[in-house]
Image (cartoon, rainbow, N blue to C red; front, side, top):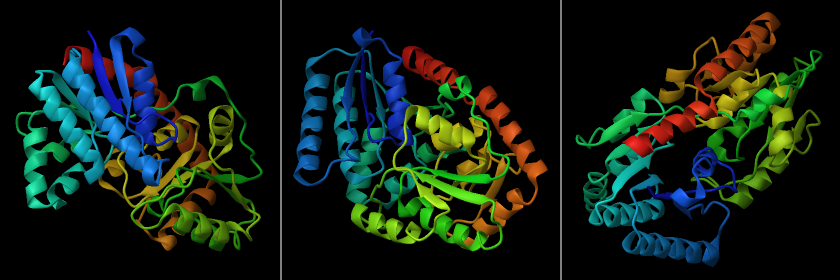
Length: 355
């Protein structure tokens, strides 16, 4: 059995690229052919050349090789979806089973907000997908238009290296952590504003920020970088650590007390599961899928784009250390029971091999 796997490999690290990379690594080399579609760290002509090269690779390999199954991580952008359309239709032409894995929360919106002529192309293409994988049960509605499509639920995971190493938390301080890409849409600027107001009241809190700069629909990389550096430059209680990996990332997660991700939109980010496995309380935004997974037992859900709501959420946890410790211990237990990487990979393998 040979699999054709199409998706973004690391670097750079995003939830989707990490999940795809771990799945690719779990499959024996002689059973897979992989095409990397990660455009995140490419710009200008380099991005265009890489994209065209990727399209040609996909087309040639599907047309002139034999595969039992095609597995891809679906895109929610025009450029990415063109690649998906080519892949789906060529695989269907060859009679290859097609499995799609959705890691985001906005496929339905992307589909229905596209121009009518492009909607028709997307509809006709995705009708040929045999199985779609989503992260939580309610995400099945992202594919509500495709009545014949089989939909499976596979929750995200955390890296189990976090279980192997233990770093003691500093009880004299409360460490807040933002560990994600530096993007406007991740709410990092609202977090900085909230923290600057809180340090006037609480002298035992510090904020560590880790992640690389990425553009989004609000700002370019240079705009984000300039604004971010300007906002943190005069605050000695905010430390920017850049992109962290391996041992450094594990130490950072395990030494933190409260993990904060005030995104404008999210599905089920791996970073939250990693934080739970590292005994962190969670502060994130009230969103459909996150609200399904998290409750007051895991931390605090705050309003999107609200500095005041973030302040209230952080205060709720730092004022009651007993409550904070209970949540930290509870989150670690939940992560180990429900979100292990072994469980994730086993579920994916069953769907791909038997679906």
